[in-house]
Length: 371
Image (cartoon, rainbow, N blue to C red):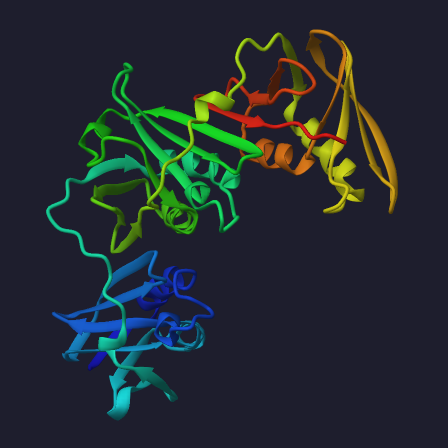
């Protein structure tokens, strides 16, 4: 393999591959990026067996070939090279020479045939989506995904198409058992998606996609059997779907909430941030005493001390005291744009629904704590 390529083009692709390539793995080749030079292009591939990234970049290929090299070190080298063009040559025993001007590196590689086969797709029907819309939907749900390995069916975002409503909508839902986040947006094109019941896409894949969506206005989406594919420009993300049943999320959303609290979102978030300073993993809950015109928040930690603050609110319903994990509220408020948010409850022991008028189609549910 021998080729010449523009440094900035290669750097852009390597940057996207970094978080996909495994940092530590029992399979050393998963820490590598696969380089394939053919037909005047350099193809990059990184995978962790669950999520795969592929990128293609124009190159002057004088000898076709393929090899894998350590993804992180290759990226760091390319990032620091001083000239706009670099030369890559495969030597004997999978050594790879990288040169730019008077700078030269020789890296140990691994054979390309040791690299895992990336999930294949063919003859899929692509759906064009607005990248900012899909990114908003991901960002407003991903924080609620479970990070517990034992709760495999909760370790991703649930995609569901709703064809019974007008307009036809796409729903995204995530939950970790303590809170739930839901967003629904009109998307008539989803009738082309190749799944009938809902599917679960892994959290890591959604994090990678959210980063990719920052760079463009449009993204192409397709599904095939147990695979989700997202394509933007020269970059493609391929994700293996989670094999499991997502819980019936509608049963945890409280109905007929007669106690309604309205509060300034930014003021509430700043207040929660101050009150959570003295919280720890052992003492992380706060008490909210809700009155008709103000809310009093009390944070108590026997190991450190306590804190108290009041905030003006508008409240309809009986006065009540309820306890929550402040981090759950702060993560919800951070992704919302509404100036005023509403919190609806049935009583002190029921879940709370958080929503806002400017956050159309979105709501989140938080379970109370016992202190």
